[in-house]
Figure (cartoon, one colour):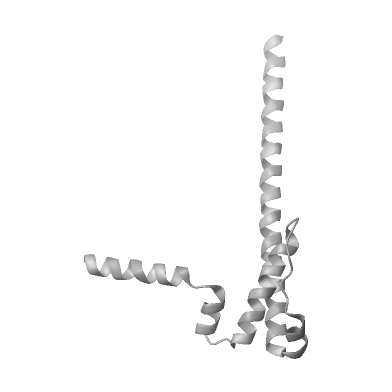
Length: 116
């Protein structure tokens, strides 16, 4: 039992240490596509933040269809994901403020009714 657990744990660690690029190549994506995806994804996440660099090998983007397709896919997917995460965080903060306001209103009404 101990060996099985250790083997499973090692496999999880090994897979967890792989980069997206390595995983994509291992799944059969062309290396040029995986390169572009990785660069585009970094750029897409950075586009949502206040500061961040775009990573794009422009000569390669203009000459290699697989790199440019990977870059576009990575940018769009990661930008969208980052925007969704940012929106979710905003909604959670808004919900917290709304709940706090409702609680304050209820407490103030309770005080007002007790004062009578």
